[in-house]
Amino acid sequence: MKWILLLLVILILFIYAYASSFNSDYYRGPISDHFDGKLFYNPVPYHQKSWLDVWRWRLSRHSRPEWPAHVDNLPHSPVTTVTKPDQIKVTFVNHSTVLIQSQNFNLLTDPIWSYRASPFTSYGPARARDPGIPFASLPPIDVVVISHSHYDHLDINTLIKLNNKFHPYFLVPLGDKTLLEKSGMQNVVELDWWQEYKLKNVTITFLPAKHWSARGLSDRFRTLWGSYGMQIAGKNIYFAGDTGYSPQFIEIRKKWHTPDLAILPIGAYLPRWFMQDNHLSPADAVQVHLDLHAKQSFPIHYGTFQLGDDAFDQPTKELKLALTERAIPPNHFIILPEGQSIFLK
Image 1 (cartoon, rainbow, N blue to C red):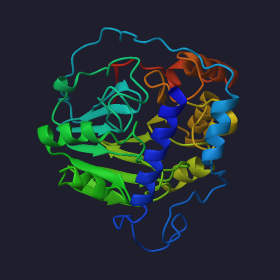
Image 2 (cartoon, one colour):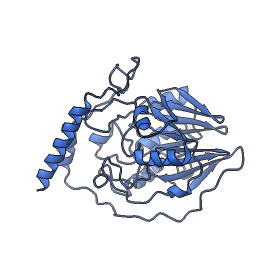
Image 3 (cartoon, rainbow, N blue to C red):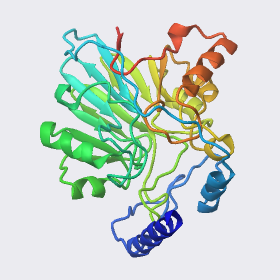
């Protein structure tokens, strides 16, 4: 019965993919070093995974680490506003969602408050822990940045709630504007790599990453992916989004800035043969910290949704080992619990 249901789901998805292949809403624009006129691509060495690779991963998996059904967050202070003009407050919500605050300015990265990172309400990766900040406790949000179209980074239900409550500006990669506008969002700005957007004395630059995009079976590589550099109150904050390791980080440091704070993903990195082109391992993240010459870093993209074969607490354990091996002081690459904040001065 389970196999029949699985085959039925696959059939429905392929029918949807065939119908979607005639979609006229896909991005059209000039050819570049990462867009061939139809599809986006990685200009650095990259091995694109096929659906056969997905099946190979699933079938070769002897066992998958069992995650806890639910983990309580540590107690934390309530969200407060920033009153000093030279101060920045950065709060880890969880997964890849981070609240960045300065005086009279609040920004969210890849926000997801939904229970599942999935197009379905009853199937797909479910939360192992609640967001570190309840949605009702958010301050007024000025800008939301989206790194790419995967469901754990572009959660339409959360974006709709943010739009209805705050009407922020949404910064998205090339190709994602139509999706947001169809969901009722008006202030949507599409960006290509190295393009800037300015608001309230804040400059946000869309930067390269090594990844991919899709929300279905027919739209792989139809929209761009990337990372963000934010210049806020005299500080440089880098948000990596989702990425594999590449020389792009050295390029970002040289062409953009040296970060005062780098926010780097460390989870869903196993098995390496499948994940390494798209996801940093904890050791990779330490190397990125060094490549960027970041003054301080903290990890994201772990401990919320089970997306790979790493155990629940494996990314943070491996990160601590990698930091010790590279003789990096713990206060240079801190593990920030959900709902906890750091201040940049």
